Image (cartoon, rainbow, N blue to C red; front, side, top):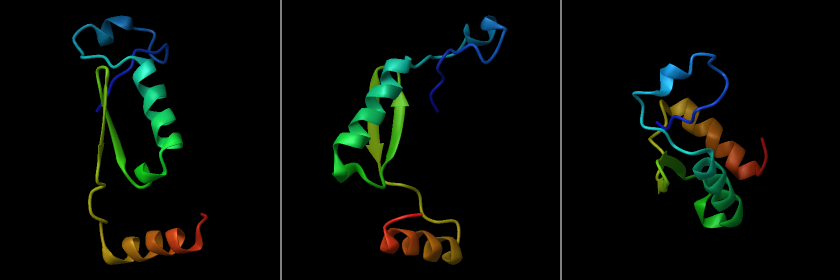
Length: 77
């Protein structure tokens, strides 16, 4: 899980003991996902300055898998 310091919390001491990921890493990950169709369906893991793409976890159950596969088949949700 990545943590980016924002103004959502008024207590900035919350972030002092956390490993932070810069917002620039998040925007770079989005740009990579948009630019490379081969990343469709991948999970982007952000950590520090790094973006790692991984396979998604298995579906929770058969019904969820069936529905998601149908959305892929239709090409829209």
